[in-house]
Image 1: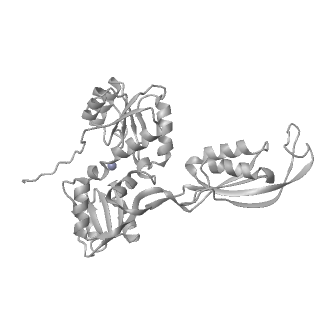
Image 2: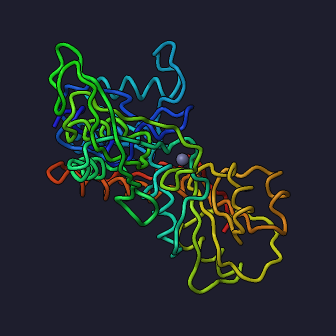
Image 3: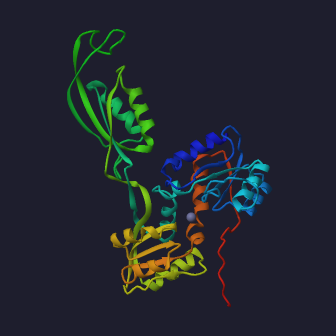
Length: 367
Ligand SMILES: [Zn+2]
């Protein structure tokens, strides 16, 4: 498989266009045309991880965190990113990152996190705005089924647990074919009226090319009349964080003890919380404290994330049990997630999970 083919597959799993503006997901090192045969999945790219990849005969490293995050003006080995880049290139290793594009999908990092602690009825905590669009297409009534089915198959028409959603109405379209045209119905230089269906449906903007291509292929007209509208509706399939609930609520103490055990945390920093039970829980793997207000707004009893600042614990006090379990701890299972997703999608690609604990944070304890 070429790197380009690998990227196309990864893009179908977690579209790179869903990454945050300041992110650097995608191909960091390597060339599209190069062949890759074996991959190593890691949370972070470190020197030890690259050594492991070389030792295991891998030619591509797939990480969650991109090791190149800011622009590099020179590569002289003075910063870790520069040294990693040199090492990867010297050893013919490609590096691909699936970072916030993997955070922002319904089946991504936070779904894995939620599943691990047993949350049910999962929803995205902060759905993305501006991602939903509307397609309206006009086509001869007899072809409406084919056109509708083609755009559904390309991924349009999904609302929550429903798919193939559309609105349809019949009317009359008019056109006059000019010289050089070969109209599907009607004659050149004559005004023609045709019984047409107006089909309306929605789709996420990142599949627009596929949807429009499928629609045009299924449509009998030489010139297809269609409109693409931006929508202000939130798109609940993409966004940050996740919220769900426990079937059986836990006490705050039981809840924290469960987090400690499941995530094998060195320490949990948490806010003072006067509530008695934890039932609705919001989570965000990694630095998710920007979602604290959303979690409070959504009436979560607890919010579990990492990299929480001192003053945010004041903001949470008595409103929500805010728990910081550590950045690495909260995302350690992302390796398994990437492995599961990729090996299911690309069956004949050799993939391994890195055995290295890349957590740069140490916890000091006398006992
Ligand atoms: Zn992270």
